[in-house]
Amino acid sequence: MPITNKLISKSYIVLIIFFFNLSVAQTPKVYAEQVIKKLTSSEFAGRGYVEDGMKKTSEEIAAQFEKIGLSKIHNSYFQSFSYPINIIDKSFVSVNGKELKLGSDYLVGAGSPSLKGTFSPVIFNTWVIDSLFEWNDRSYIDKELEKINTRSVVFPNKIFPDNLILQEESANQLYREIPQLICNEVWDISVPLVIQQTSSKFIHSLSPKQTKTVNLFINNQSVPDTISSITLDIKTHFEPNFEANNVVGYIKGKRSDSLIVLTAHYDHLGKINDVIFPGANDNASGVALLLSMAKVFVKNKPNFDIVFIAFAGEEAGLKGSQYFVDHPLFDLKKIKFLINFDMVGTGEDGIQVVNGKEYFKQFTKLDNISYMYNYLKQVKIRGSACNSDHCPFYEKGVPSFYIYTLGGKSGYHDIYDTEVSLYAFDKLVALLTKFINVLLYIHKKGK
Image (tube, rainbow, N blue to C red):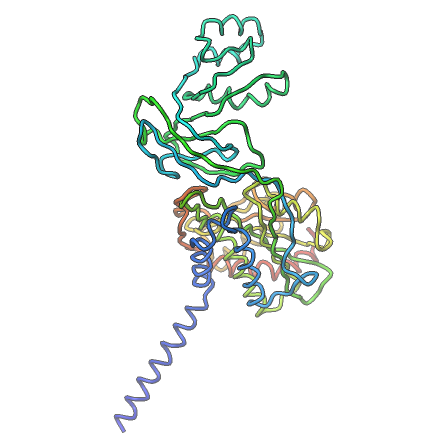
């Protein structure tokens, strides 16, 4: 008898542990960790423009949509479109014979063309450059420029030197103004290389066009005070019609006269050489939240139809969301509310709600739910800002929030955005679930 009881007790304990572990494995945070780990892996090459990174990511998200049980719109999860992008395929840089490391020692400007060779620096007289913007008298500017070594820069003849390195902020200000100067006058410009030395953190970006000049951003601590030569081999190519896909699925709700739309972009900055820009927080975390919300509402039928959209091309200038707004797969007027997730991988200090001031009634409800259930440290309100994929919808009059988390540590547009805490992830899912379920009530009561 005692042996039997002991066996039963052990079995009971094992059963409890089994169900406890099963429950933990099914939490949104655990699933999100799996999604983020996969999307930031080398398989997806930074979810960008080399090694089919973006294509592979869109296919992975579509596979997750199908596995979760989302329905297709027009018999497909994909909405195809294209846009121009400059793609950096390869980069080698050495200063005074020492090779630099991409991402930590230097970055290549997004619009840079291909360039190979060894260059010696020529430095602008920055006081005269400043005078170019302080004075609107061209004769004064030309007179001052006569004092400069003509090999450096000659404005009267409208010629720049063959090899040019700008090392001062004011000189870089001039470089930024060059395109406008070209519009005003036809200038013969031959500037293959522009360098900005900086102690600031590198932030990579993308460009929808290719410039005539290679831009390099170099960490001051990675190079000596005096640069005698710089050798580089940079290969890029311009793709006028890069093909991408928005990934779209939906859940049939209790009523179809209105829609709730949840969005997140899945693209990031890609890969150069063997260096990946992983984008864990920006925005593998948003995709993880999008998929987690889909899993919740598949099991619990929502009041409205809910559409889930994973956008491509956000980092290139909101390309996917703008295309969707211009070529909608459903009537945008049916959208009662849209919530965009971008950089939601932390949460130690709560969340920020862009457009909270524009849709104060909805914001108040969201804030009250969080307070009532003690979900987040704070739900912080903010006005409108065109800084993520909600913007094209908002500009069309669609009520929308853009939510991102606050606090914690994460990288941004660099090689260090490799992992996130997901500190508030489970509570954020619970908060958004309750909020979406009460949107019907808010709708009945008015905006």
